[in-house]
Amino acid sequence: MKHVLYIIVQNSEVKETDPMTAFFVSRIKVKDPVKMQDYAAATGPTIAGHKGALVLRGRAVQTLVGEDPGQHMTSVVQFPDIDALNAWFNSPEYQQHAGLRDEAGDMQFVVYEDPAA
Image (cartoon, rainbow, N blue to C red; front, side):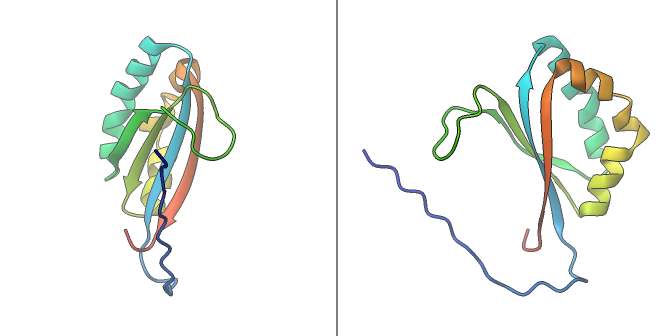
């Protein structure tokens, strides 16, 4: 069976004044599953407190294109805009868990903006 992936590209003008929804995508190699559960439980309320919402969480099952990063988890978190995302990330409520984050897993967070979200 052949799998086909369709990607729709929308070309529209975005004005600098248009608010853009912001997302961060995390890629996590879990080092300690118990600490990862503790980290998730501790930081979830900090996301909600900054009007963020978890959109997706799961483990990788297949790489279709590019180098396979190996076993990892991914999450996508949405915020109303980049300012709300940055306020969350830099908040004392979230940053107090940075040590636990580093003990729980090797993480990469990448931020994206979407004017059409």
